[in-house]
Amino acid sequence: MRFADIIGQEDLKRHLTRSVDAGRVSHAQLFTGASGYGSLALAVAYVQYLCCRHRHDGDSCGECPDCRQIEALAHPDLHLVFPVNKQGKKSGEAMLSDEFLPQFRELFAERRGYFSSQEWYDRLDLGKTLKGMISAREADEIIRKLSFKSFEADYKTMLVWLPETMNEEASNKILKILEEPWERTLFILVSERPDRLLPTILSRTQEVAVPRIAPEVLEAEARRRGVSDPVQARNMARLSGGDLLELEHLVAGENDALRKEYFDLFCALMRLSYNDKHLELIGWAEEVAQLSREQQQGFLRNAARLLRESFMLHAGIPQIGYLWGEELGFCSKFAPFVGTQNIESLIAEIERTGAQIAQNGNPTIVFTHFALTVSKMIKHL
Ligand SMILES: [Zn+2]
Image (cartoon, rainbow, N blue to C red; front, side, top):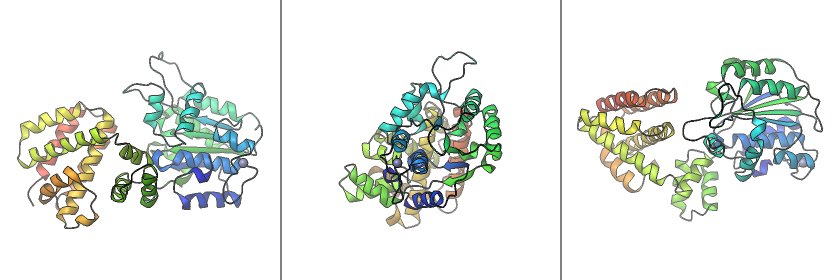
């Protein structure tokens, strides 16, 4: 994976190559940002740049043995740790990343480093509810591997993808490792949710914040992927929020059915709210409770977006809005109900609900409370 393979992120690439060129390589680094911003791909490109013996023009050569092996995630001095699991495992049985390395390499190669945790879990066939995790035994394995001498490269690298999936025991072991100086050893943690890491892990790593991909870069990417209408390409780039994976969904139209479902739920909630139909609101909450947790979060994200767009319409600045079709139709009519008096509390309520769902709150209770709270906030302004 060369920096040239990374989509956008020019400033960050420059920053990373310059720091290596100047010999400033911090031994523990934390890449943060969504998978769709390219955090994992960037981390691998960084390691490759560091290990390449023929780097030139701000990039690795892509051709030397080190580059080829790192690209394939098969370099003897590059160790990978990522969340794993399997259906029907025995209690107390710990899974190790190495057992699933072939599948991980395959997915990484297919998706050029851009894939979500859910895509990975689907590859492991974990079903709807099971997630991957990094076990305490994996942390022991890291220590064992680090005690070997490096084979070829100047650096031995331990790359941990999604360290937030470690439990407390594993986190504490990792922390001990980070506290000890390991000669010419690099720890690269790649996290989507650094807020879920121990503060002590955060304080012992140097953060490399991977920002959203610039809209114009994604717009070009949408066109490269076959969106011929420039307005649609621009809208998709804006809607994807700097996230390549979101853009892919939009381009592929994969989310059309789901997006329609979220939209219908949003319309129903708002209609029931401004008509004060409390009993029906409870029925609405029961319907949302049937969705998977991912879908519930998807609904909430969409609701926040539609509320913000309605607010823009109400404020009379529709030219910076990004709605079309039936969303524009509904939100134009709904706009008089969203204004400066309630937009912030509505968004705060959505965020609070999302956090409760993330913490495994009972969805019927959480969404009943949500629906009744929202209905009190929705009034003709
Ligand atoms: Zn090279």
